[in-house]
Image (cartoon, rainbow, N blue to C red):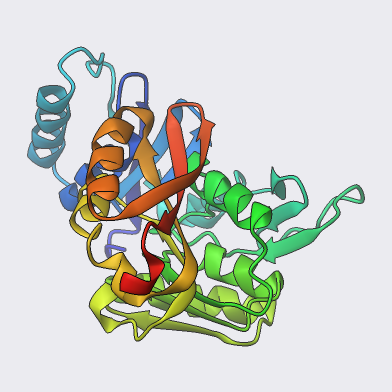
Length: 288
């Protein structure tokens, strides 16, 4: 945060935009964080010294990427730093992510009607609370295939929410990997809040994960999943499961072609709005 004790915020409608790509472009432009105010609206935060020419450049980048989107009305508003925590926290309340899984920030208590698993996730600016559709799809698939007693890899762990849920569901060991050191710090913090055992987090990539694993979770960008199709089996135990998300339904024809050609067999597909999650098994597990 800058010394002038101000920050700037922008209301950004999501109609016609790809949320994953948009998030990446905003991070590259220097945003401090993103709030999902509603399914079709984000509030994006920028430093107080972020300049008008930087804002103009970002808007032009977004307009080139999505020519049909109406971005003419977006603007920056300055806010005093004293309002930061109140503004950031007021949107985060306990939520039921999927049946039998609730997520709450550390300053809120669960409602009386909550049942099943509860996770405490501190919504730090860069990583959010895991409320995105792809996280919910991963949770649904994980609940369908309980990992009790299994060794789990969570690639692109972010806040650590999926690794923490796997541990609460009885996994014997969970490793969360992310290439962002700040994400790993956040994930470790969240694991401490949830008092889960057998969970470790590490900065790195798939190459840094010593397998084999009974289940691999990968909620990451399409471009990365495409590149890893032939690599995942090296880290998966025979009869292991691979769960993928971060995928738009429009990505699926290409993903099916790539993964089937790499020796995978699709065992389950779940959809939520424009997003999808896929469960894969090795077609020839002994050859992995």
